Image (cartoon, rainbow, N blue to C red; front, side, top):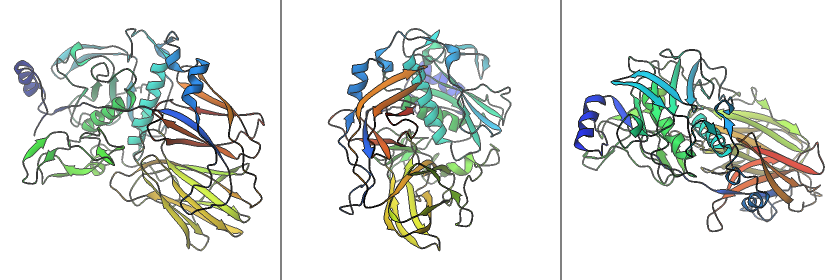
Amino acid sequence: MFHCIKNTLRQLAQSIFLNRNLHRRRRYSRRSAMNVECLEIRSLLSGNTVAIVNALPINQHDAINSTGTSPEMNPTNRFALSAIPALHSNPDATAILFLDFDGNFESSWRNFHDISSPAFSMDDDVTTFTDWELATIQEVWARVAEDYAPFNLDVTTVEPDSFADGQALHVVIGGSPYDWYGSSIGGVGPIGGFHNSEPNTVFIFPDFQWPQRDRAAGIADTVSHEAGHAFGLQHQQEFDAHGNFVNCYRRGDAHAGPIMGSTEGSERSVWVNGPTSSANTLTDELAILSGPENGFGYRADDHGDTIEQASELTLSGRLWTGNGIITQAADRDVFHFHSDGGTAVFNVSPSVLGANLIVAAELRSADGSVVTQGEGTATGPAMLQSNLPAGEYVIVVGSNGEYGSLGQYSIIGSISMETEVVPSRPTELSATSEYGYRHFLQWSTSSAAVGYRIYRRFNAQTPESLVETVPANVNDNRRAQISIAELRG
């Protein structure tokens, strides 16, 4: 078994003695700003044009700076450590992955004793949280929840009653490795600790490596990585064409990177089936995570796989919506809707934060015939558009078939008539913060708009990516509102 250890000789000796079954991690991340566009319903002028967008982007970052209500602009806002939101990804699950951000004391962990971990902090105050810290906590949770969405496991910020083996894994997030561990690492966790005699606690050291503004994605990847060790996974390692060891953290490509290797520079972080202890030793990570040693298995299917078992899309105003989770490669979720005739436009989007799933979607008639189909990207939706006669239809959602392409998705769409009026772009965009971890965008609506798209980007030179699509606020003709977990990407 290879290890990446870049320490002094003393630290190397300590690592060999203590870490025969222990793994450590470095991670990185990115950030961005956001924009808002108005949605319309009308016919396509070109087969390569997205018909539901017809407005110039409004830069939300400028609006935030002008209002002074961004978390970054209010560094003096302070909240008690108890202000961490109670978040659950799967509250009915019996197995728990607990993200502990408010400090921890461990009397004994392997050969270490009396370990005091401070609360997660992005400044020098570990006794309170700022609103930016609370927003980062929520984003970390959302990204980890996406990584473990296929499994019957609750990723939560609520401490469980028991940390018995096979029931709960404790992820301590706070402090520096030099507080007690003594090595330059981003995290540490024993392999199989969730179910064997090793401790079922892993440690993440956010103080060590991530700049103030770029922590959430890196911390989340490290949490999923160290938890992966506790669930029995080894490092995804790199070997050359002759089978010689190259690197203990195998890099992915621009498209995807292995959670148990390195995702630096990759659009997505995913579970993989790849080499671990040797070039010819492939580890099927999904099989291990869902296997009998961990005991929690895959999450129950949330929607039927056939037209006869289809779930109903929800109609609100003129928008159809739905959501679900693709848990396995063969999983297909089927949704039914009725058309009175007109141009149907649907977007099936992956998770807003840390998406693992690349969506493949089909629009089918009631007899199962394919009307149209589409495939999304790491950050973009699968788009379905067709002129539909009156009748019954279904949308079939699945994975594009790549290993690890699993996770959450949402559906939003509308069916329009040719007489639809093109709406004007939204105006008077502003942003406010509430409780430190919830942020609201607000803008004046157009009477012709049926929904809005929220975009984010780093700056004027970087491309925009879709964050979320939301319906117009039918309860208020003057304003529409959206709550999002984080104003960064």
